[in-house]
Image (cartoon, rainbow, N blue to C red; front, side, top):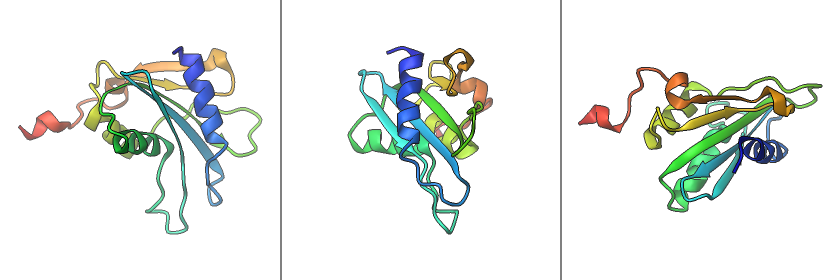
Length: 138
């Protein structure tokens, strides 16, 4: 699957976001090493703390289906009625959840917009340097 195809799936997932408070709609598409894709959107809550991000929604859906090995994730986000979607990076909590399952050097994070020429690709390690992972507890 190409980065552009994964971003397109994230854009589709973004349409399902529930964000009545911030109006910041985010979609994610998580590619497993087996080739399956799990999508997610952000789901806000009036209490704010129970809000769940798109990236975590995708990871939790995949894990609940038995997947544990991931190759990449595409993330797209921005205001509901924006003329152009800017780069939207995962929050710190989402970065840590990804780190639980993904090798920081090998896992690819694709930051997309509504313009294919603006895709930015980096490793999880670039987004979360000096990370704390399962091996830190050994």
